[in-house]
Amino acid sequence: MSRKRVAVLISGRGSNMAALIEAAKDKAYPAEIVLVVSNRADAGGLNLARAAGIATEVVEHTQFGTDRAAFERALQAALEKHRVEIVCLAGFMRLLASGFVEHWQGRLLNIHPALLPAFKGLDTHRRALDAKAKLHGATVHFVVPEMDSGPIIAQGAIAVRPDDTEDALAKRVLAVEHRIYPMALKLVAEGRVRIVNARCLIDEVFVPLPPPVDQLS
Image (cartoon, rainbow, N blue to C red; front, side):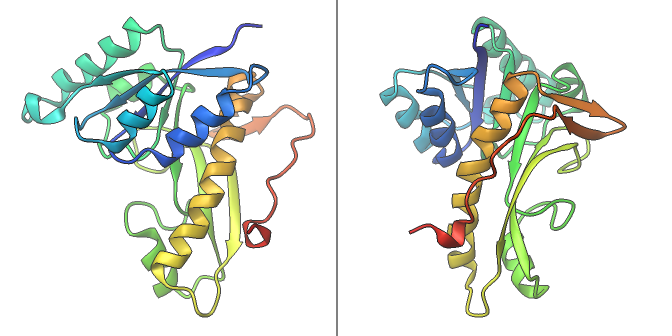
């Protein structure tokens, strides 16, 4: 079976992008990262992608002013040029319109630094600490028009420590993200994820869970 052609959309350093690129170096992995797109020309992740030999495109949203439809047409053109089959958002700081999302339905993934449906939106680590949450983590989900609300593909959780700061918690959650995003993309690329009644059903093949991050050095 041929590997699925994947684009990663970024706005910044691209650490989750780097985790996906690393996973895809294995020729047995069912997806290959063929394109990295940023809405910012100064995104640090672009240099990482180029160093890995991956094609990059810059579609700067500022060039389109308030015309979001024109920005998304340019984005779609870049994806079509590279024959992209699956799109992964990785720190892409732009909300996508319903038309674009619906075109990519079931093929558009996002990673969110919280255990959805808790803490949708921004500042998730501070809000988790303010709420005195016992568990925190990350979620990979399909994108739907409503922000951070799509069917959940995978989650990873860690315990919130009594002495946690926002930065310390963010660092441990990021390690969770880097483990579950490649796993979730693998499941989708293999065709093992079905959406039924707005929930993800995974084919019943054993999927080893990532080790608890608190046990990692």
